[in-house]
Length: 244
Ligand SMILES: [Zn+2]
Ligand SMILES: [Zn+2]
Image 1 (cartoon, rainbow, N blue to C red):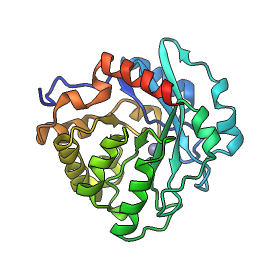
Image 2 (spheres, rainbow, N blue to C red):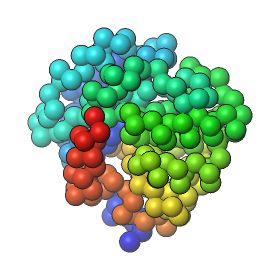
Image 3 (cartoon, rainbow, N blue to C red):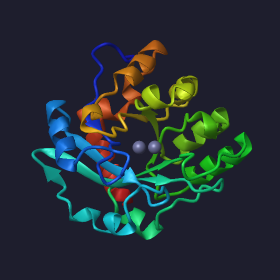
């Protein structure tokens, strides 16, 4: 079955709170938004320490003091770690990443100067092999172009999930073509994806329609989307638990 009008996400694995200073809502506000959207899970994934307006290391060190579940919403206490160079190095200590529920790795030009396609390809190939990373965040970002054809099957081989990021359709429009190509390759190589909002306020939590529209347009197989099915989410959570 392909993505269709009825396809909807049940969990949003990538959201920011006020702890990232360019985001606008509290954790409680995000939880209330998740409840309104009938989500069962919310990623608490603020930016790693490499960006100027991210929380300090102590924030992440203390993150597991948050409850695992609030009002029936499972909280994934994680981070959107920054890829700091073109060797796939992250801005967070590995020991801390291992303790967290969930780790996204993303490039942002606010903390890393873009290199060449060969640089980003090398970096993503290293990240594919990094056992601390669960999700490759918005890798369609135009400034950090890589060899999709070469890297996407390697993500699959090492159990990495690839993100289809709805925020891209709002703030990284130059990257939309790349997102389509990445999704097509995920379908070809059967690499699972998560469709996330990357919300920077409560008003965006669970809002992924534009990303789902794109997946519908390219006839993406629904079974490859982890967060549109309760069983797939459950299985993925136990995989995360066994890795962290
Ligand atoms: Zn990001
Ligand atoms: Zn983000």
